[in-house]
Length: 267
Image (cartoon, rainbow, N blue to C red; front, side, top):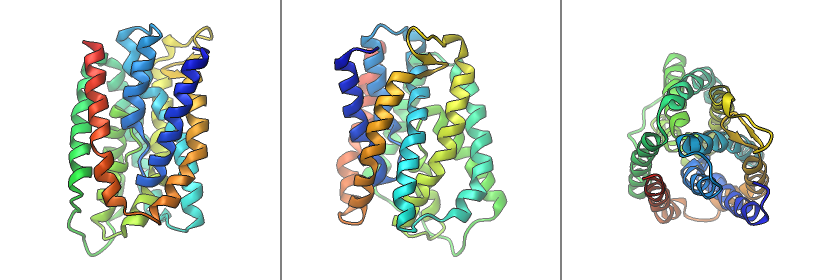
């Protein structure tokens, strides 16, 4: 996996993911997972575990992407930490538990689930329909349960949860820019818990020869994470300078197209 060409691909992927993470408040898993799957297959990784490896590695990468986005958003004081604190316990539990389910599924079926979710995400991003806002912030119990649901679904398809948490925040009449910023912070506990879960469930795949720790490929993690950490602030800067809704429409189709390509490569 220390092939120079592959490392360049990882760095390019990370640079792109960093920008979209900062721009849309998402972890970038919709792009990371299918591209990593393709790269891992080209390197001869077992088809039975290739999607699991892509999911676990993506979760680890999202840790770094989230931290970078949080740092940039915090400078603008746009994160609503009270909501993050109320959702975090549910997120940690739900995310971790669902990794046990994901680890038992075949790569092909995981890719189907991933593609269906990406289709939903693409439609939601393109339409840009905002939920009807409520008059106040939800209760602690609602935040806990919602955090568990968002975390569980996010770990199954290895995303930072932005496609779910942003609409959830908008329902509470949170400003769109603050919703994106808070979504970045919500992505951190999802990524941490998901990474631990995929490491634990894939521990039998750990190998220093291939530099893998459970279902996390360390080479891909380092390369993509370093590049994404560097470029995430660019996306955050663009949020306050461009029309995010228009950019989302342009970006919306990409994750679905990539997921279809991933299924094709596994057939």
